[in-house]
Length: 111
Image (cartoon, rainbow, N blue to C red; front, side):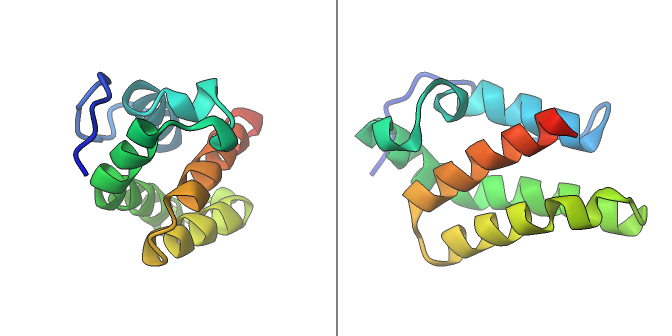
């Protein structure tokens, strides 16, 4: 199902700091992650997550790889977030994906 959301449609790229760039990209492209509880996502929100799930997971994987290569202290800090995102994607569970992404945003804020 094609999403009808009128959100930004920019590809993810690292410009300044990988995790902060990911947070900004998620907020611009998927504002409902911040604005709503996953229980209140609309069918359009879920359609957008489904439509762009691979792009989202690839962006998250890039950020994870950057931390791993840099031997960052944050590899363990984000390990559960990355696992939840990958599992939700593998299971095609877009409710869980939205929830995992919302938790990731909180983790980045707390970091």
